[in-house]
Amino acid sequence: MYCGKKVRLRAYNKEDVVYAWKYINDEEIKKLLMPGIPYPLTLEEEEKWFQNQSAFKDTYNFAIETLEEGKYIGGCGINNLDWKNSVATVGIFIGDKDYLSKGYGTDAMNTLIGFIFNQMNINKVKLNVYSFNERAVKSYKKSGFKLEGTLRQEIFRDGKYYDEYVMGILREEYVKL
Image 1 (cartoon, one colour):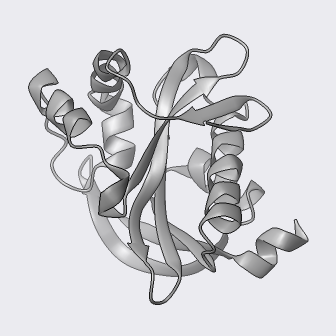
Image 2 (cartoon, one colour):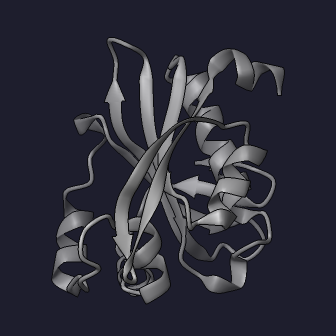
């Protein structure tokens, strides 16, 4: 387990699966995370995802729980590792809406990138975020991420095309923070 100021990153457990399934099927959350058609996932699909969790695949998924209550509120992790070039691609979501815009996501991201730089000896952490997800962009900037590029009109949501941002933080920038 890795602790921040507000959250703890830990392994997923079976009890989290139902909550993760509910969170990921929330219309707003799905719109912010999924590039494809926002179609609901079944509980069986979420259970299968849980059963396939393994650190041996170069993906590392963490449950995010609050330090105060020990409540599962979302997830984060490393979606892709490029060991040759020392780059990790990350993702995060806070599914419990009571914890949005209160610093839990920023703290979870800070804890995750600290783990990546300090334990994995990675040089760069990057992520992609949709331009309409202003809350996430603000949070990532607080964590030290910089805008590296814009994929113009990359995502179609609610009858309109939006940009997708590529953001990154280098080890040397993290150390300065």
